[in-house]
Image (cartoon, rainbow, N blue to C red; front, side):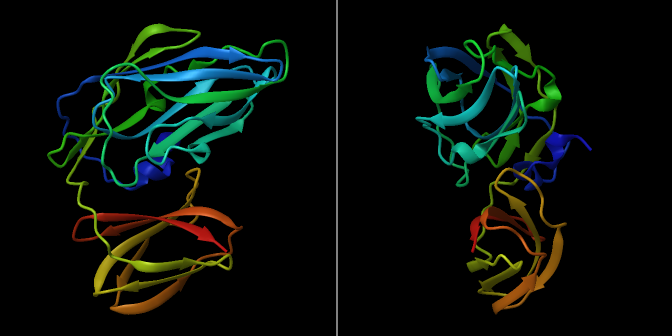
Length: 257
């Protein structure tokens, strides 16, 4: 199965075949500074309208530099945990604005800086993966529809290259619910929570970088306090996806302790 479809933010959704009208988003990276130890890029966005989530991949020579961190992010919930270098020279970003309230940037804006440690010379060229299957966007049209957009990229390999994202969309994912409260996750795999009413839910647990820890669990939740048991997990940050069989979802960030 395609890596894109396994990432956590898109596991929140059941895709449909309807496509809404699109607009073109622009992404670009340019070198802001090179020191003896670091290479810093400004990450530009433009026509960034109603976007609440993304996934993309970037490539570089992993023998010449390695990903270090991001700096000065201006997007909600964008942090170092939104970026992962699973292999040298392969950088994957997965981001979701957890409140699903978009911030719009119509003019060119530096959304954050990408910082790399230099291993050799002055580092390497940084370029987006140009295969459309490596890009995903979640766009809210303010009418309960989420749809994917076209992308125009500029980097050290391409200038103004158009990427047409596949025609998939989702409807009525704007309904947020507060199904669970007082949620606790233990390192022994215990998940405890409270519910104010009985309901049928689908639960899935993911690491912060998108690795699914459990298969989707269908559960008839009762009113009050209850728990279930996963396998043991290491300490760290996790994401619990809660989907109601009647519609609506809840995304809960948890720290296993």
